[in-house]
Image 1 (cartoon, one colour):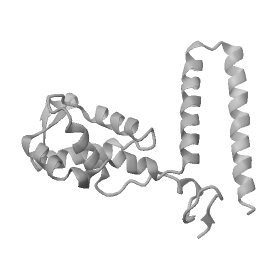
Image 2 (cartoon, rainbow, N blue to C red; image 1 turned 45 degrees about the vertical axis):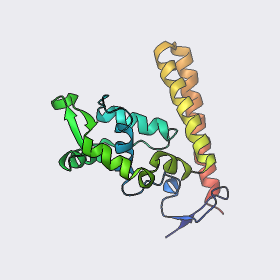
Image 3 (cartoon, rainbow, N blue to C red; image 1 turned 60 degrees about the vertical axis):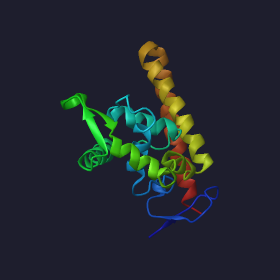
Length: 177
């Protein structure tokens, strides 16, 4: 298997697909810990799964956005364990910690840590900068789609095509090393 490792990455090279070597490192139990901690501060404020996902993304500086496929099963398991309870039905379900859940969090506060911070630290600063820039470009693009005229859209299209080609050129140059 080919090894891909840019010189700025530090640490061990990633074996396999070059684009996946700098994904955030989410450990087993991080989703559960994050959910418990986010539900803990104010037990009177129920939050739905989407709100919890958003807050994890915000607290990890945009590095970690857990999928609904990991969040909702974790919430269901915690409900089965008696750690959380639901408010509402169907698509409007929100979650609260139970007294048992609050006790669980208090007893394990140090063990639970701050998983979003750990995940954010697992991504090199250079990659975080690129992610932040990409977010800014995405916001500019959304703004453009709402207010641009045909000339502006064509100019943006040309810029994006040039940018895409430039990125592929950078990647192709890296294969020679």
